[in-house]
Image (cartoon, rainbow, N blue to C red; front, side):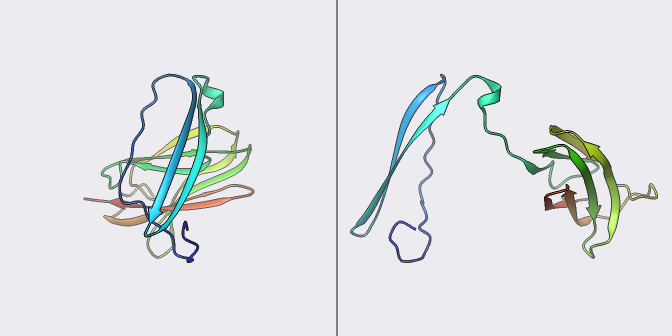
Length: 146
């Protein structure tokens, strides 16, 4: 909210920067609306060292989405512990439990072949996948097409 009116301001033009070398880059963004203006300055530090890249934790997503006949669910754990990854139908009923074990803090990919607990193919529609750890729970939606 750059104007202080309690309404989030939108930027209507997409701007892309491309940095090919590690280094420090100053970035300044100025937003102007009517007679008001606000400038934000930040410094972007790029490193070619993998440990310096900020990581996204939790349920990252599934691909492809929509999908048929299989999708891959990706997630990253912040810490080791008990983990459950399960698929639910639109009524909130469990369709398939993919993971129910202790995992270490790491990046994971788990595939679902559209089968329920009995090994039967499920029908097309909206499904939810839920990742639960000792501290956090994440839920996302996916679409199975036939």
